[in-house]
Length: 119
Image (cartoon, rainbow, N blue to C red; front, side, top):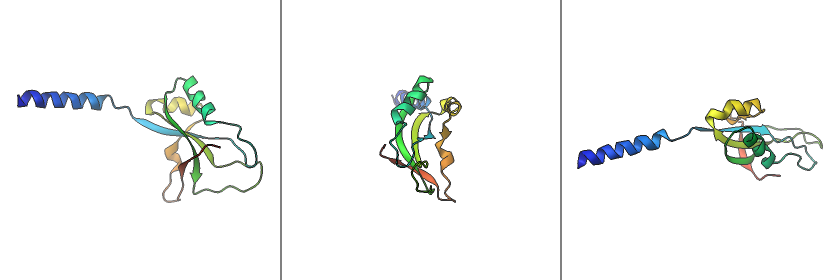
């Protein structure tokens, strides 16, 4: 009985582990300008990915941290569209102009990103 139970547990664990999909976060600047209404939405960004056959697991608006931009109407913001996708789709996303969100993080320089409310 102990052998049967142990075998079942090992098989269940192996099956569960084998089905785990690696994910990663990608981003693209939202393209919005200071003092102007938002021109690009998170939904548009998500649709661009799904139309290219990329499964989007989660989407959020975000902002770059540890960076600054000049404050003047018409200048870009630090807004981002952030998406969680399967790691196997990262090249497809890069072909659409998205980048790996890990590239935003530099602890030495104090840069990164944080989730925010969408404009």
